Length: 117
Image 1 (cartoon, rainbow, N blue to C red):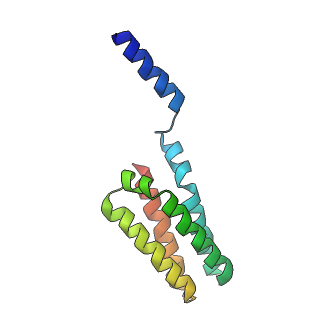
Image 2: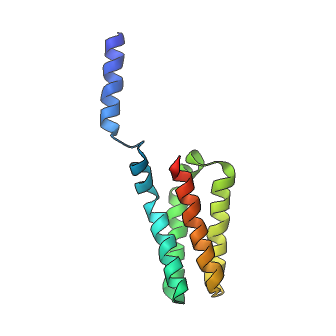
Image 3: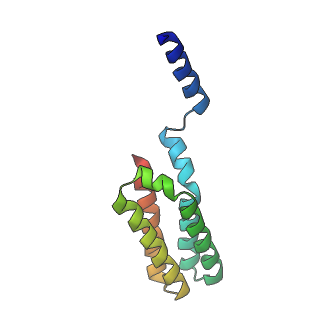
């Protein structure tokens, strides 16, 4: 019976693959990080329409993976991330270049911090 349970556990682990590795977790964060970096770059060049579109893509990517942030990070981190996404949307909407660039950089930092553990 013990051999059967160990075999079942091993088979399950092999099927799941390296999902728990830092590389795999970082890959999951890529859509949010790439969108935030794109907004940072576009806002820095004051290209507001593409920045607004990327900000919306960022918001959708975050909401699609929100449950992961809730599991991986603590409440303060994922709530701060949500607030910063709202601040970024406002900064892009009001065409506040410096606020948009700083907030996008903060978003990247928070996501990397959540996925680093």
